[in-house]
Length: 172
Image (cartoon, rainbow, N blue to C red):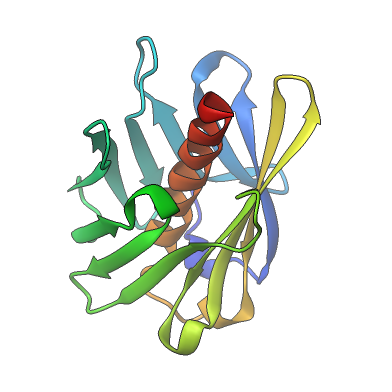
């Protein structure tokens, strides 16, 4: 698996693994560069994330205010503070990174991690192509090129965007 830091700015897509419905692969061409493995069970929200730069487990707890739990399993330790009902939040990493996670459209179909000065680093687009079929696209922005936390931003942001879309679907 190649490091996400080695990828050129551009768009990359998540796809479901052919032999495992709980697994999604982020691909650059035909090469898998990250994975999200959803935990089994009814309405499971937790995932195991894997990149060449580290691994993490993500989960949410709580009914009204959703607390995000980040368990570093060889990845950079980090804390995420959710903004609650508005969506989004703030991420602080052990490397000193501080990032905001924000919806960039009113319908929450696009999200982005922004760095200092609200410069977009990684963007996420969830597109409904057919009924029950959503395509998840990750866009590495030019400002993410030298960012040490880009792998965590990609996998955590993808998971948060997918959950945000699920939450929106459940409430509307």
